[in-house]
Length: 293
Image (cartoon, rainbow, N blue to C red; front, side, top):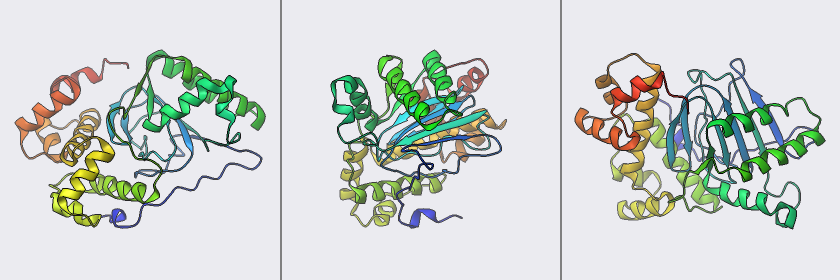
């Protein structure tokens, strides 16, 4: 069993390509993104997954996306990789840039007011939907072969479109108030990665509290303050998103999916899944073939 959660979670170092102040990269089936664990970095990140289905884990928000995804992730907001060998996407494009990559006050000038608000909103994570997702995604992909100057102008145009649309959701509107304290980022990443590794078994509160050198009451208060959720709620949501992934990827019984996702009571699993998704597991599986989001 992997023990990466015992190591101090590290700040991801992002190095822009030569002659550029931002990072632009496209991943494909042959070149898969390598970030399966929760991580953070000071750069703002735009992620477009072209097609496919998979987990979306940003801050304390967790959901299962279908037919691709477009996300804007703010500075130092912990998140997990969005694609793997089962996702079935044709490509994944990421753009990363420091909030001040155009100067400390660039987003504060009148002409950039709407983009400044977008950058502030991104601290909680934003996801875009439907035709907006695909239209902006196509814009992002069209930047691939441009020179750095044209690519920069294109990124600003992408952000302008993101700021203009109303077809989006703020992912951590009710929680995740963490600011850029590195010790908090490291602690919360350690907790999140521990859950990612151990969610298929019971995780006692005293065990996870001990991992971060806290008392159980202190840990519970801290986790609720940071994420807006109780630890039990967070773990159960992680399990439910994993169950949604299995419903799509594996033709195994729903009972087996319940236990593989870390639940020990089938009726409790059914009740939580319906509350979380609005559908029973069997309804959810039946709709997967027909739904385009």
